[in-house]
Length: 226
Image (tube, rainbow, N blue to C red):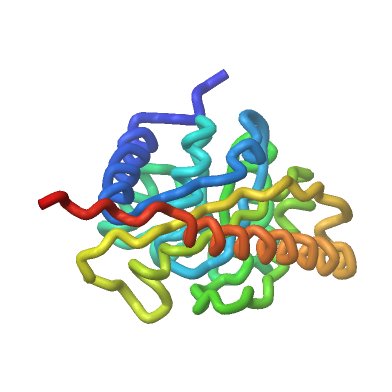
């Protein structure tokens, strides 16, 4: 079977890992919930533009790359778009009401890959989970794969809704992966997608709170001995 990793995704992984180790004091939990083979949709709370990279670093510890949903406008940009294209991210139009887009992502999952997305859609302040959109439920139900809820906290201290912070500090950042949620129902059923969305967001809320607690337990940086 062809490896999920290629040259560009490997370079991206190690480059991001080195950068994040310099910028954060990271902690990961629940990695055993990421399947070592087969398709799954990783859904995370959204407190920073850096969140997908934390999810990707966690999955990499299980030997799996993740392909994230990227807006077509960003995918076609000259610099950042080049990165998205080389690492084979998934371009989509804004909103997931387009069944062509849903099937495109579902095909990636059916092929045994991992995909990632934030059902909230936009970066929030993190004080509470925003309402989830039904795209994640439709994709999981169409592909027939489990959903792994992911909670993230701490990335917002570096780049939250208010924008990037250039303070010389290494904030604690925690990422918690929860037990997989089995996809039940049909993707075009409104009651089924509503119920699946509710289950996904409940799972995310639970691990997001665990991520807050885990970030508080990350050891503070050592002070230099004089």
